[in-house]
Length: 260
Image (cartoon, rainbow, N blue to C red):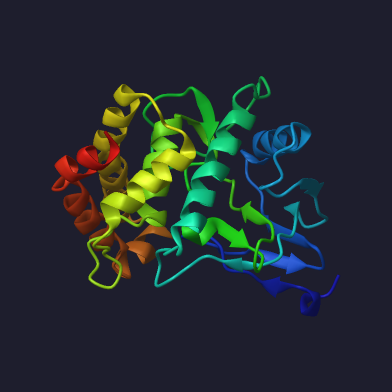
């Protein structure tokens, strides 16, 4: 393998060291990699194809995954999916993942990379279901969620709340804020299939808590001087998560009205 064969790839919030080599992706491995590979193997074994397939470890100690062709759904850091049929597709895809992972039994020695502590541990959640981690082929082609390295115990609602923030989106930014955010949230949640009124009420509260949890995490990591989070804080992401949390928390009545 030569350096010229490696193409740097974009990814999530911190895609350092992720490259494409042919039809594979190579990325830094960690103590969590065996558990993540077990998870991905399970998902493919039960028929869920919207995730990379693990191919082991290369000679440089990097994890090897299948490459997902297409483009990352992204717009100035947040995704806008129009028409709403595409937003509904995301909701259904997340539900398919949650159903597929429901009977996954982690290895006895599983080690997970926990970034933001979750509310609940009913499933192994993705924890970063966002536009920057969804690769879509053109037209009606395959959609693939990438960047599974922070998969860890969590809950369905915690994953859904985070995904709603990015995909609806629920944003205070003047360029991203949607007048139809309530209606889009309803489309997203209906497509996911969250039918129980009690769960929908829980989700309304979780929307703000999950967003604020990300702000709290970045603030604390910056205070401790931990990279790459200090760099992410310096570019203003902390302010984005804080203002989005305030926006979401201040509109809970509207979210509840839309969902119930």
